[in-house]
Image (cartoon, rainbow, N blue to C red; front, side, top):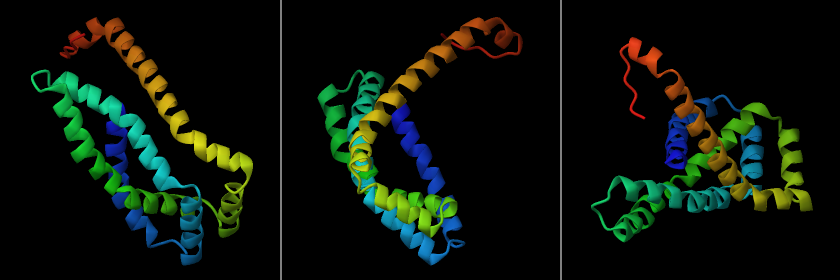
Length: 166
């Protein structure tokens, strides 16, 4: 579910990115788009979705115990996943805007050249699985920390009228 929420939260950034785009030099924007394209960002985004959709399906199946688990998976793979993949171009444009706001044309060209090197290519290949693993581990640690903090502070929360089921 965390992966799904991260994707949804990223959508909120799209409108801000579109507004900021008006203030970017066209040459910088073009260099940023070229760099983002060189990274294979759309393919990476789609691979990351493919890695994360299993977690989302698992949560959906547990949240809908009366629905056939195969039906839940089918719906998510045939309906939800294509929708998420369909926004890839907008996310890539948002990414280009973010890079264009922080890097010069020269720096963007250097980054683009880096991705042509063997280590740059390895970074591109490994990033989706690395990020998925990192997000999963971080989510697990954060969940444990949250549960521990809620348990530890249950009395203080209750005194303030907040009931937290654990």
